[in-house]
Each structure stands twice: as C-alpha cells, then as structure tokens.
Image (cartoon, rainbow, N blue to C red; front, side, top):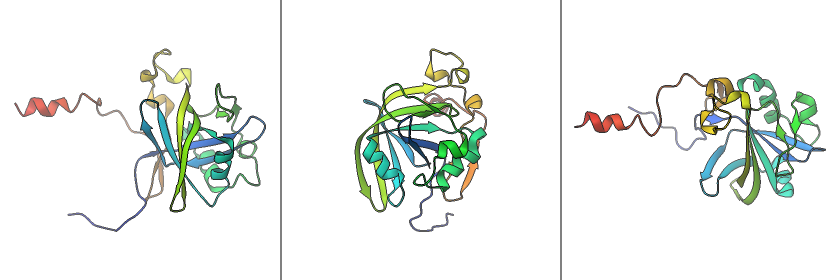
Length: 195
C-alpha cells in the first residue's frame, strides 16, 4: 500500500551545496540542495534558486558561479548561509568560511568544502517562482587528502569527504552511510540469477 499526498516538493537525498557568485573582493554564498548534473559532454549542472532572494540576480549579473559541496563538519555554516540573506551581510565573514580564487571563473571557491565546481552560466529561465540556472563545469577541485589516488577523481574517499546530505520534505541533514555496492556491476547479478 502507498499513501498519496498530491504534488509536494520532496526528493532525497540531495547534496548540500554552497553556491558562490561574485569575486574575491565581494562574493555571496547561498545554500542549495536542488542541484543536478545535466549533461556529460560538455559537463553541465543545474541549480534552482528562488526568485525572491538576492542570489538569483547576483548569478545573472556575474554570469558564473561555483558549486561547493559541504561536508558534515560545516553543517552549521551551511545552514546559516541558507537562512540569511547576503544582501546585507558578508556570509564569508559571518561564518568564517575561506574564499579561494578559482582557476577559470571570477567567483571564488570555498576552502572548507571537499569538492568545488567552477561553472560558467550558459542558460537560465524562471519556472514558477524559481530561477533555473545551467552552468557548464569549467574546472573541478577536490581536496587531495580526500583522494585515495591523487591522480584519479574516481578514487574520491566518500568517508573522508563526508558530504552533508539534505532530505527534502522531511527536512533532515544526514551523513552518508557505508558503501553497499558497486554501480554498473551489482545489477549483473540479476542476469546471473535468471539463468
């Protein structure tokens, strides 16, 4: 049996992402859980930002942004950046998070986040009361100490990165659990069992 509720904004899990736009002198942080990879070639991602706040207009004006995946260790700072407006404060100063220059885009990355993506704004539109931004990923930064092999992004140690996860609808932060399988492989067991 299933219980139905009609249309609701519930989806899980979602990475807690700190989106930064601006430059090294003045930048804003907004916390967003509505982030998704869109295409592989070129690599793009989509973010959704409300139209009533300061951040959407700042991203349009700047034409680039960074997506910084928060770790469990900065949960309070990440939450703060989502419940306060950057219109009247410097969230870097208020939270103690550290700006680092990006390699390609103007917007800085956040040192305390284990994964940072530099994005160039390629498209945007408003749907309902939400800005939907498409960003081409121009550069990827990963904390070297979170890689099992510093030359392979596929060796990212999820336990060491400890990404903060948001469960929409139920409004909970969680941390990842233990590995339970290998994608693109575990499904082959179904084929073997049916023979």
